[in-house]
Length: 227
Ligand SMILES: [Zn+2]
Image (cartoon, rainbow, N blue to C red; front, side, top):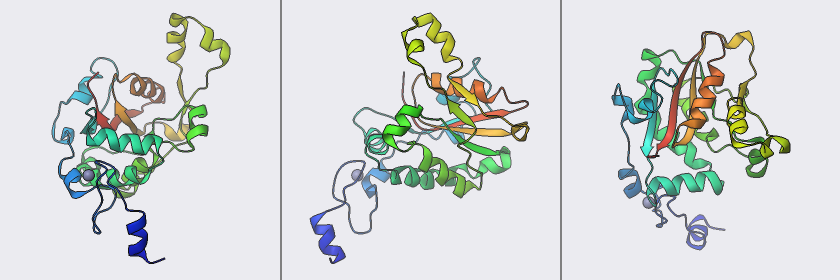
């Protein structure tokens, strides 16, 4: 079938606002691109994302790319990426953000990009980790290796779910673990998550990564939301 006819029958919609995309537009329309709420964290020594971890875990730097507002463009993008299989959104956002991160190579020696792992059961249902394409996109653009085989999320057994809240909180400290080899010693890891709210997940992941001797951790999230 002719490409234009296909487009007429199955028009592409913007993942940000649901409006029809023009011929030269892909994934997100020009208006949504223009209105993406960037945090500009990469230009600031102190920022909201980094401040969340002050006195809790030591991070080299922490940025969020965008602000998350309810019913806004970013919420739509993340919803489509996370629940509708639109993994191309992650690639697009990585390509869009990478130019702002070129300074990282000179300023920090980052060795590996690490995704916050999904719960194994969730991964089975969804078949993909929603941050993977964003990670791979950044990995390609910044020439930093992507490693999704280092950090793991433990699966809870039924007996653990039944335990009381305090016991579960103690357990949650071991929610994430690293499959470490001496090769990882002394590396600087860039941990990637989708939306940061309380920061509890990133805190737990960072603590797991910092068990590696002389490791350093930095964080980038797609979006920042007030908790
Ligand atoms: Zn749009």
